[in-house]
Image (cartoon, rainbow, N blue to C red; front, side, top):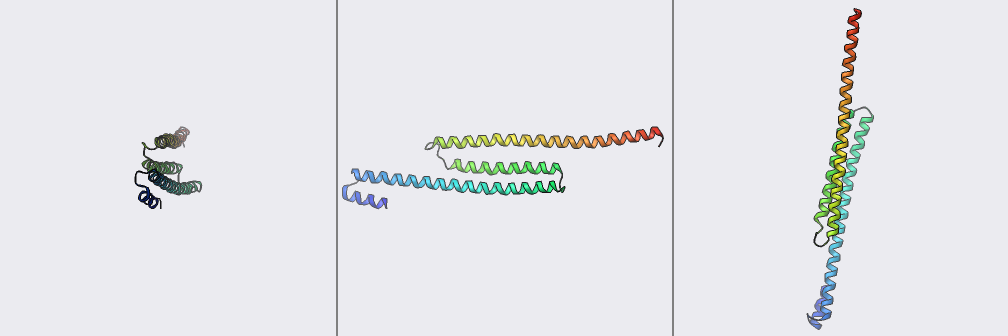
Length: 168
């Protein structure tokens, strides 16, 4: 419609006329607004897709927790599963941010580009903290298991030695 208007203005007043230039600016503004709306729609799609994927991972995590609570799996299995779920959530969020960043031209929108870059940095930092915390929890769990094992062996040896001393 705006292009048709431009054609009519050019026919009536010429391509160099002020009216033609105004009509051309209007077309540029309409196209820019349309691109921005498409970008925003794509951002919404990316966000919804990431949210759905994260909800699926959270449901799997809750199922794993229920298995642990029911005594069907060991704590070490729970911790390993949680580590894997954290990795999956990180991959989902990282992919969504990468897709959003790919849609932004750093020359046309440097503020948005920098904001997404900062989000990626914050996500990476948070992920590293979570992974480190989970690694520490697994190390503590492994240490507790070893202590329990050696404690049982030590107790068994102590009982055996006491029995030999008593002559039983």
